[in-house]
Length: 480
Image (tube, helix red, strand yellow):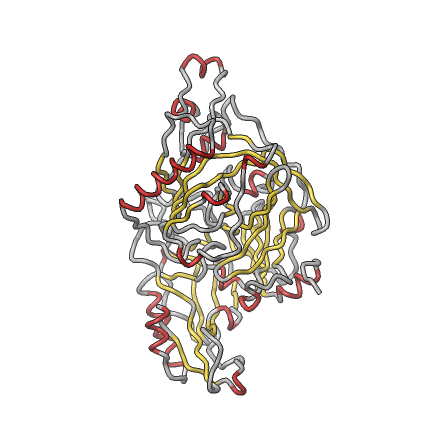
């Protein structure tokens, strides 16, 4: 999951990843072409036109109408439960609007995550075993999904890579498996695996109705770097979960529970897909989606101003609502990034506006330990946090959309109070010093207790502050 946008990894780590990947798949998948190679794809630097499905692919028709799925809040994101295979195997993955590929850890004990010490004892990690599913099979080299994962502009490339002869390509008789892939993320994470098809079980219009979707395409991943938990990609590419289920002409929406519900198994955030997701109330405000020429599959919005208390910020840089000639800029809205990131010097200007409005003493030791830039010691009568008088923060997006953030979405307690005192920190961060990619990111922490609607038909994103716990209860996503 993205928490920053640096892309530096060492050659040693990459070599270890590739070696471990080949070791895993030589033992786990006997039908892999020994001549196939891992193609290093960088999602954050590759642009291409999605090719038409080749004559080897089968067009996928949606078998799903409206859907509601529960999302479980954890420490840095929201988990979607996937039930894959026959019989079904349960795997929890992050919901990520900032990527396309859906992938799950594969291989039971052989799944390996490099540089993932924080997750070694994490019980959330589930793995998928293709050998235990009677409906699992490798995707073919000519499928549109295989062509997409390998960023190919030529529908023959992947089958040539898989070892097909030219004569079999011309006769459309080669059905070799899709070559192994590598897929990277903006914050430096990397996964390596094979493209797999299997049954996916989803919910219908209520949590009590389920439907099976055959031949769902996903990554079966044996080795990762800094990616310990699988991901469900919700971008607009052909590989994404909404695309494969037929929702790209409709949309989806979510209402993220407040962070205080993290790891609470008795309540889940509601995720809607289909017509019910985009039906809006009178209080929903919509801002247009911006079309990034660099990343057309992801969701961008334009930030025009930020108000602190009653004072409007200094002029927001144009690159938070416009793209340059190379396609850099815009504000990415991303459920896979934890905190909102803003570019310099605008971020420092925002800090300078906040500081004189806050009378509490600074907790500089906590700032050094956590890396957050503004932390304050606040009074806690009876060792309980209260709604402290921090200045309000309002984001102003294009089309006169104003989103007043709940206070818990920007100043949050770092630990339990002691001696009637606690510490709260501002949970915004500065973008890395780079002109490449998005100029800013609107993260999931700032989307808590806000209904967010991705209206893909009308190319707009809606915001409405909401008690997401109450919304979850109304949808039957709460256990008594």
